[in-house]
Amino acid sequence: MARMKFLCDAERCIECNGCVTACKQENDVPWGVNRRRVVTINDGVPGERSISVACMHCSDAPCMAVCPVDCFYKTQEGVVLHDKDLCIGCGYCFYACPFGAPQFPQTGAFGVRGKMDKCTFCAGGPEPDGSPEEFAKYGRNRLSEGKLPACAEMCSTKALLGGDADVLSDIYRQRVTMRAARGTAATPPWGWDAAYGRPDAQGQPVPNAAPPAPAAPGSKS
Amino acid sequence: MSKFGGALALSLALALCVAACGERPQVVNYKQGSYQGKPDTPPYKAAPFNGDKTQWEHALETRAQNQNEYKRIR
Image (tube, rainbow over all chains, first blue to last red; front, side):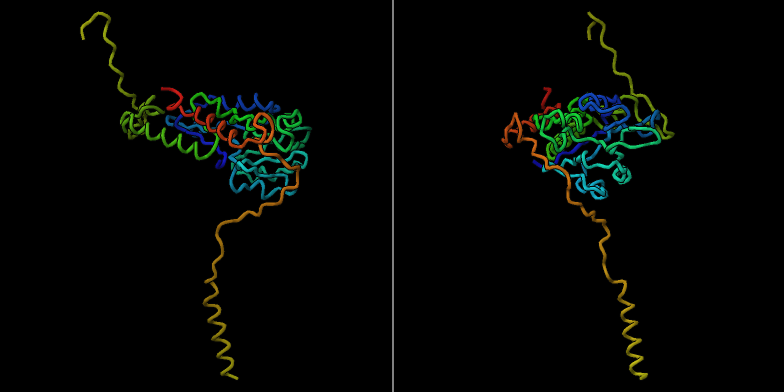
């Protein structure tokens, strides 16, 4: 087993927010906290790209480095988790994280922060696996059930992949190879260009040529 | 005296010349703190795998391959 990682293929993500919904539903994430979200670059402009972002479970996690109470730990599978009983809600991890993964529930007026909440790679936390205490604090522990994160498994276009980094690399490598084999530079097999055409020199989309009309029933072809 | 002063000035000048030759690491190395919270158990310790790491890894591998439509759909 290598390291658990997420991989999002921006060529496939259709910004359906299914991963966000799956995460919230699976882990009973409170209102106002989004462990996962979909970020779209150039929204509404031809060629826009979306990517699903959550905790990336960094190999050298800055949140772990800045935590003043050392409540973070990394599992053998490379999943970055934390102990909510120790967290003081200072927010240092939020400032350190380049992905904006740490979330804080608003527990009162005047911006009072609760304990930090973030993606656990559906691996729970330092409570007995599958216990009600673990679910209440960290959400469901799918990893201990032999399952992968709900967001990745629910992704309809399989843009978001989750699991062992080596396996994900193999899947993505095969995907890229198949894309190259099935399409050409002018007619890609799928993606934005296949649906809307490639932009011309002025950046305006040029529609693809319509496919040939099917022959009428009974006509000789 | 002047000889000694000259040698001193020369040694200082030489020291200044090589002062910039020191190499410092350019990449920040985060110092990981030591975890102070409760210990966690590996995910395969509890049911349904009951400590069978090989079976757990096989289950995850199978699930991961379900994300590969080239193998899932023929």
